[in-house]
Image 1 (tube, helix red, strand yellow):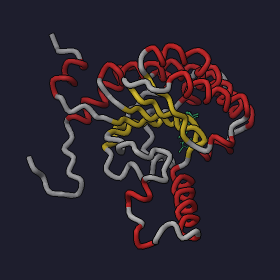
Image 2 (spheres, rainbow, N blue to C red):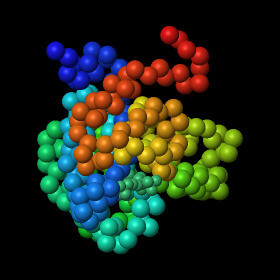
Image 3 (cartoon, rainbow, N blue to C red):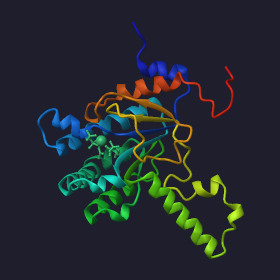
Image 4 (cartoon, rainbow, N blue to C red):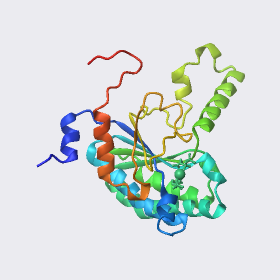
Length: 247
Ligand code: IPE
Ligand code: IPE
Ligand code: MG
């Protein structure tokens, strides 16, 4: 009998510390069933649960989920409203269980653009799960990679203007400290669902040497086995970081 994927992952040993996911395909999942797009977003909550539990089981330390992009603000208001409500519902229904499993949630992005109910949901989730040591879960909401870099540049320029920073002293580490993900290692593995081969403005700085895995499955159909398959694919890769092969 073939070994189960978790045993294979553990036997291989090189588990990605940080996995990032572009959760895509909710709209197509819904329209394929003759349902409104928001039905796909709601169904996607089940897949978030699967990804979080799967990450804990596999020994991933950081899971970063792209939930809502800067550009998604250009979608119809009714869809934006549904997504914001979903954030509230997720916080409400999951915060206790997440805390119980040792999952620490952080919501990263331009959170000031969220309405007050969504911001309250963010606070609830972050406060309830603070200190969780099993998995750090980053929910990227109102997040754009370019906007994050612009924000970092603006903050550094401000420090230079106040003479607190010498431009000559700016290095990669200085920029990294200004990012929403500051202090975290870069993702080892990026998973995108729905078969799209695009980065869609996600983690532009952080993905410099990340391994990509594209799965055909639409996000609402994503299950932990899909995460395990992505990890096994990652474990077969040789990461060279611009150097020559050491194999
Ligand atoms: C991903 O699914 C969720 C968000 C971007 C909020 P989509 O809503 O992009 O679904 P498709 O790509 O249109 O199928
Ligand atoms: C990326 O998906 C954003 C999120 C998953 C939140 P999109 O569906 O918005 O990206 P495009 O438009 O297909 O590039
Ligand atoms: Mg999409």
